Length: 355
Image (spheres, rainbow, N blue to C red):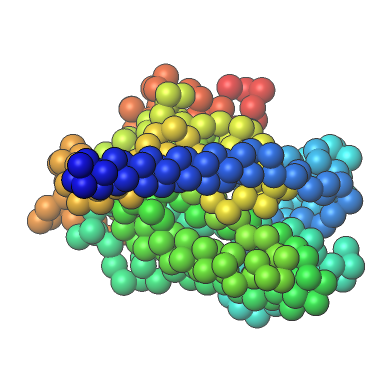
């Protein structure tokens, strides 16, 4: 009898604990689902790397929501074209040439935006570069460039706007990282390292700034159709690297459109969500890696065998932009949607109407 009582009691306690856990989980899900959407019309949004690709798509989406838009990038011509597109949407827009890896340039750029708009309400750290190739083709300089652009290029603007946000006790910071900042993918190691650092900065920042009512959202996109493969830099067997990366960045079943990604990111910013993983494949990968990181690493090791290998005389440490490489695979119908995205988001000279 005593044993039966103990067993029954244990089952009851376990059941109660399980019910409580389910209740807490349901409450958290409901809280996320019903999180209030903040009104952002009239607010000033700064998007780094806003002249092309996802950055331009984000600038356009914030403009549609009624924001005043500031964009920065390194190329003045691309910035001017992007600014004209934003103004065509009815947005008040400014563009500033800035290399976010240069601290002094970032300081001057933030000051200009604050002077023009009277302050900044939303900061989107989006600027980035992609270097594709096996580890033996990567140099210290490749790691440094990725860290300078995607880690320090996130830290510098954030620390520049932080005093204003802290003084007002409000503000929103959106850090565009990557699923590569949670799962390190072969042939993208310098990129992954910078994104891992950015994720750590972003998540820690959210925890520290919550008490000051400053929202920080970490965005981890999977593959997106932004046309960025054309601007990505290839190393090693450059043609083969460009072929697999270009196709992977274009196929509809593997990728998310830039427009859809931008809408989801802006929604996350308005809700003040903590963490957003884009694409079903990225969500599944992040879940699997969280449960069994060793297995996912081994699976990626197998996948790496299918990627271009460069050995001996084939090793090429020179960086070549995708736009400079001839590839029958990338020029095939397999990348039709990628080409359309590249034309739409200013990664090529070719106009959308010509495709």
